[in-house]
Image 1 (tube, rainbow, N blue to C red):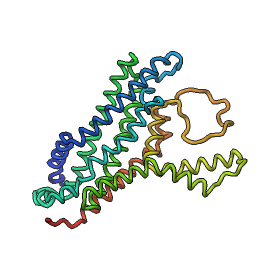
Image 2 (cartoon, rainbow, N blue to C red):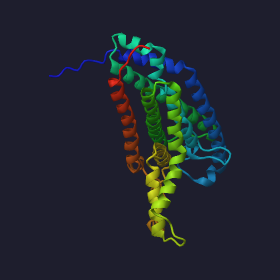
Image 3 (cartoon, helix red, strand yellow):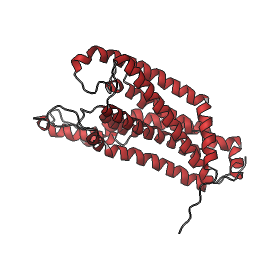
Image 4 (cartoon, rainbow, N blue to C red):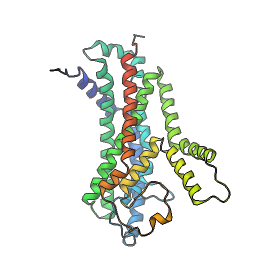
Amino acid sequence: MVKISPPVGLGAVFKKELSDHLTGKRFIIFFTLILITSLASIYVAGMTIRETAAAAKNEFVFLLLFTSGESSLPSFLAFLGFLAPLAGLALGFDSINGEYNRGTLIRLLAQPIHRDSVINGKFLAGVAVISIMLVALVLLVAGMGILLLGVFPTGEEMARMLVFIILSIIYVSFWMGLSILFSILFRQTTTSALAGMAAWLFFTIFVSIIAGVVADALLPLPQEATAAEIMRHQTLEQYLQRLSPTTLYYEATTVVLTPQARTLGPVYITQLEGAIPSSLPLEISVSLIWPHIVGLVALTFVCFAFSYAIFMRQEIRAV
């Protein structure tokens, strides 16, 4: 029978990193920034929903808080999808090279701590901090929504908010894993921070632009394009955009927070004929975005696996 020994030093590294993150200025700054912008967005959405709730006749009024926005302020979902990756990047961009440059990594490994416990502890502590931040944020938003709307979320709405939190944790953990990978690849913390910012800009802004250009080049639309040609063009552009984790996150969370959403791609008008407008059960919504969930989890594990493999093989010497 194979006996598996517990990882030596994992608990110590986890506790130290958790304490450093929660008391660090960068975490407080990013959490405060996301909190202020989110509460402002929720306030605007809440006031708008309260005025139109009677006319809307939406059985999931509480979920509208997360997806409704105004021309002056985007929705809470848009704010979180745009700003939360920065919090993930901030948690990991100097996790390894910072220790190396301060000369503390060689002293840390001189202790009875396994090398894999260092990177495992840092990653798990980062995930714990991200979970605490997002759960606190959603609870604060929900509390503000109860005060503004005067209604409590139903069981279905609470279940959908739970799925939304889990998706957000996976999404931000991907960005943290990517920044940890950069902190291993680059010795300078400024270089790893810039690499993380470049990746964030590329996946958040430039992927949609590049997808449109590539789709126009591969499937150009003539002056009088048919419906089938437009459909093929839009489908190709959407598939290319899904190479970005940001697109996967937006589509998945939109479906979870909008029970009326039935499809993620363009459809023919004939496909909508006879369709009864109604809400989907949660399990059907989750099955609709299951490929997105698998994609986000796979990207997170790939980043961490590369980080783990490179760090375990990396030569570490005192500087």
